[in-house]
Image 1: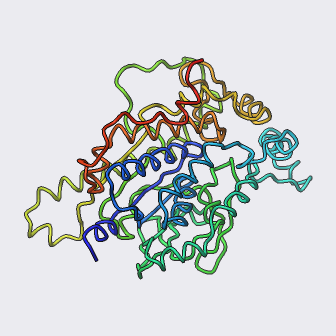
Image 2 (image 1 turned 90 degrees about the vertical axis):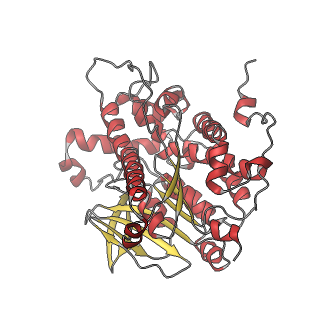
Image 3 (image 1 turned 60 degrees about the vertical axis):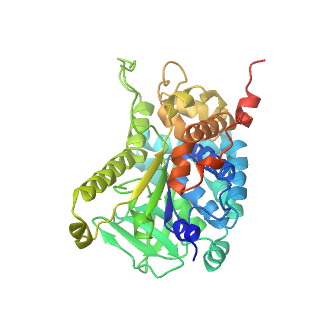
Length: 418
């Protein structure tokens, strides 16, 4: 094995959750492909270990299926997210909204008695049947096996949370024999990753229906893998990654200065958005901080003491949005289908003011091109602004980089004034 191949085999990718916010990841991945080409680096898959949660699990599975052509697969993901519409993820016509969302809201206002009587217990706010159709076209489990057999991929892992047992479960498949791990309230299970696992991992609580998956010979219903996820980086480490690129779906640090806030009582949408942000965003910041503390502690130990511990330093590079995605979402609430917009307006979502009231909730459901395109452009810009750090992380030759002014992105070209 040559040096480049050996280095390649230790690199992991962690894609976090966040619904429509995962469009940001696509911009980052495209920029990484561009930086690699600029550095004239080898075209092999830069991420033999790929892990994902929620919408990040979907992007992770697509990348894994196309790990023999990273640049082409990143471009294919770009095309999907660049032209996204909500109808590709959930039923958004008025009739379907009445059958799902309105009936679901009625359950809370009138009670379970009527829904029992009508035998019409709704399972979620939205019907994500279109997403299942999209994933069936984009993710082929048999291709995952081929990628591992051919050496393009070492491991893929996606996570989901059991509503029955309360356990956080990482489902993984790997080229090598990797013993499943068990930690407090989280376990790993080795099995072939399917579309059902992706639907379970991305089932935002209350919004999308839970999925039934087999676990140790029994069926359990699973929801979004970001719930109860205390260590999002851990699966990549267990699967053999020695250095890890993490792509977040929200700001890791708030900018200095006082943010304008409303003195009004929070709407249900604001409360729901706050809850979702705590599910999707907080665990990553804590895990990155913990990993860096461990690295700093190990660096202080004498060599003999480091050799005696099972802990190893893990190089980590985090790329996260430089802007608040809530603020971006507030500008695009009107892009949502009328029925969805009306439903969200009923719980307090508006696109007015800094961040908009309830815009955090909308930011997870805005699978519409005007919003996803801006997130893709932001992901690309944030990554290209750190091109030297990216090149150093992968060990690519920065001296080979072209320093000419980059071509404007498609988003920039399509949104020039006039």
